[in-house]
Image 1 (cartoon, rainbow, N blue to C red):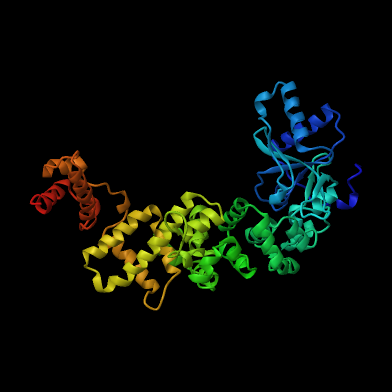
Image 2: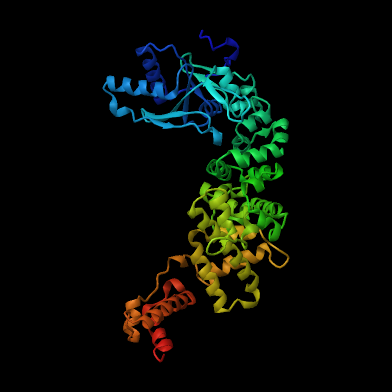
Length: 512
């Protein structure tokens, strides 16, 4: 038995069933050890082991090595494959450098072997002196396990011995008891890498596990919030947040962020906004919207989404695709910020854009899609409120059509979001009535696919305009927009005729 193994760490009566491809991979890695006479032990660490034990599909394979750096072993794998004439079955080595300033303490070598994307790392031990940045050295399996984020993620699969190891002593028990716990005291674990606070919440919601009481209390500490704000890159925070929102229970994820005081840290707004414009209770108002859309029953949701296969779920919106679920919950969390702006630069920056792009380092695409959802949900609520008194108003139909065109396929998400902001003057039935009016009486289904019946050249030919003339060019642009409005206001917009549109243009614009 190797020096860094103890019989007491081996989990009895737990056998991991390998696929043929996994067995081939592990056999190959053992051949590398034998070929180069390496006195090392290879262990699969983290999520792969946890998921295999839970009977779930496991993809990412992280391999920890007890006596050398990951890059060194990866180089040996590549060299071995080339020597065996199997160069085509192995990729090139990538190295992700450690970045202690952002709590990324471990250098990782990445390599594709036999179709698997593998991360190779050394077992690690961290030593703290008078600085928050640790000194790193190759450690034992026990030291490595105790430095991991959660006990359920600290289980190892020993490739040499084909056994499961639990060096924290509680990983398997916590997995069976459905508990999220840290190997070391929670404050120490969170301070070492504050991103673990978000990972603890994400895993609790992903697997429907309970947070250990001491861990839950620690997540509410100001020290943890401050460390999360100052020590972890915004990109890593956004990755964890998106993992929560695409997971099976985004509402619980946001509830935990809110109850632990992290909601305002994640969705950070400038201090000037907080003092001058923003209601101090904005995070609670955001959570009210989140709770409301989460509580939509399957019947209501199926009506809004026009889907017959929406099933009753713990979270009704679980029936949405992960990406749509992420967008609607992200938008719901930001509803109180929709009308605010941040001063600075050539023009004010919408606060929504500031939070996503600056505070979270998110994408422009996310800014655009969330902004559209928020704007469209507001417009749909206003149109719904006006509908009873103005059902025959062409202008109201036109407002609805333009809203649907802006939202495109996702306009129904905006309708769901609107259901999270009902009031004394707007009921759920009002939204259902609007949906029926738009789809049936107004025939606006797929109106976002409508193309203008007349091109700029058509308009020039009808009215004798010259596109090269500046004033005519402006007129053509104006008339083109009115042509589209005419189409959308027709009884059946998708069936509007070009000939009718030409006559309308002649009648309305020829004299001018």
